[in-house]
Amino acid sequence: SITAFPLTGLHTTVLCSRCHLNNQYKGTPRECYACHWTRNQRDPWKLRLGQNCEQCHNTSGWKPANWNHSSAPASWALTGRHAAAVCTTCHTNYQQVTSRECSVCHKAKYDATTNPRHSTIGFSTTCQQCHNTSVWSPANWSHSSAPANWPLTGFHTTLTCLICHPNSQQLASRDCYSCHKAKYDASTNPKHSAAKIGTVCENCHNTSAWTPGKFNHATDGKGAISSKMANNKCNNCHPNNSNYTLSATKCLGCHKKEHNNDPCAQCHYTVAPWGKTR
Image (cartoon, rainbow, N blue to C red):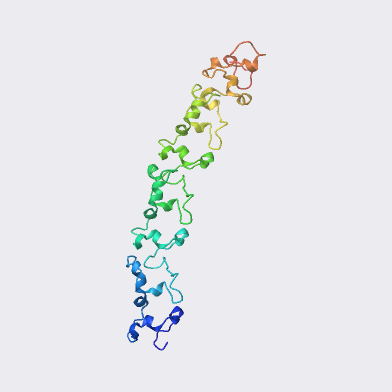
């Protein structure tokens, strides 16, 4: 202690000759680096950590070091799983990271994505828009934000990306019909194409449940019908699945006692009162 260099920690247990080579005592440097520089031969200052060993090490134990990534020269706080990673995971061969963008380290994950394939669908390489350091997946992808700008509701929120984006392709159209054409073509009660029902699916369907559809007989150009008739299935009045014209409409299935003529609608309105004739 009288040399103004008190010994602490493991320094108190070493032989004098470990620091005073060839019994030379005068002029012994006091900087840690003078004795400990050989430890850094694995790192030929590529990371530029400096020679002030005491910034990270202490005499009680050389390891583990108390390296603060938030301070200079890094000045980049490590969070989540980054804090648990070994240095060489990001600093291969002890090289400085050329960029702080996530994609520099995670490009392989970006390229390997399949649901959806990021490069094909045009996702940004700004990983932090969807991912975070706590856990890489699942990602916090918002369909409401750019680049999609199309909020998902109902059953759409439960689907995997590839259901709507086969082969991770961007959608050519946002119209429901572009995805649901097969359902439109396969409809039977009523047969949409024969009944000349439009392809604006959301007029009758919604994302919470595809069926039952809400078909408005008045606003879709077919004429108003009574609330009682509205509860019927289409084929009760339209037995011909390929002909939905007035002449092919079947009324006598319910109105046999009125007349033997069919269709009744030639004389009777389809809204109450039934007795009112044209």
